[in-house]
Length: 244
Length: 54
Image (cartoon, rainbow over all chains, first blue to last red; front, top):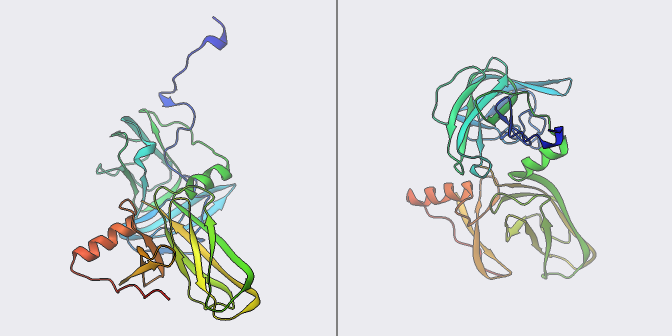
C-alpha cells in the first residue's frame, strides 16, 4: 500500500481540516477596538465573537509573540457558536491559562473539557476569571494543538457577525432631493444586520443619519439635501452587527 | 426607546431605530436586536411613530 492510499479520518481522535469551531480563539481580531481595562455590560461584545456573560465581564489583555492573552478579573466571557458550524457528537474544549471553561449548561473545569453537542444548535462556550488564550473547540475527545489560521481568514469569519466600514456619497445635489448610497458588506452576514451609522461628512446635507433596507448583504445610506451644491457630500462611519 | 422608520423608497415601515445608539434594526426574527425589541413591545411598551414622508 502506498502512502497515497491511506484514508485518515482523524488525527489523535480530532478532526482534520478546519477543526476549531471557536472563531478568533487567539483574540487577534478586535474590530471594536477595545483597549486597556475592558468593562463590558452583560451581553456586550469586546474582542470579536466574545461577549460578556450574565454578570458582565472585566478583563485586560496583552499580546506577545502574536499570541494574545486575556486576564479576566470579574464576570465571564462567552462565545456563542453558531449551530451551522456544529455537528452532533463529542467535542473537546481546550485553552491555555488559568480560567475555567464550560460547554453549554455543563460545569466549569480546566482545559480539556468534553461534552456532547447537538448539530445545528447554537452553543455557549463560557469562561470565568483567570488567564485565557488559544481557545479551541473541536470534534473528538482529545485536545489537539491550537489551529493557527491566517489573520485574513479569521477576520472574514468574524465579519459574518460584525463589520465596520466607511461609506461616502459625493456629487452635485439639488435642495430637497433624496439621495442614497448603497453599502455592500465584505462578508454576508448571519442575518439581516443591525446598522449604526455616525455622521462623518455633510456638505449640502443635514447631519442626521438614516439607514434603509439593511439586509445580510448591505444597506442604503440615505439623506435629503438641504442645499443645492455642485459638491454635495455625506459620509458615515458604520458598523453592522449580526451577532448571536 | 425605539422609533419606527418609514422607508422613503418603498413608503413602508421596514425597520425600527433604537434611539439610545441610533441603531437601525431590521425586522428579521433571527436578529437578536429585533428579538430584544419584540420583548420590549411584549412588555407593554410602544415605539414612537415613524416620521411622515417628506
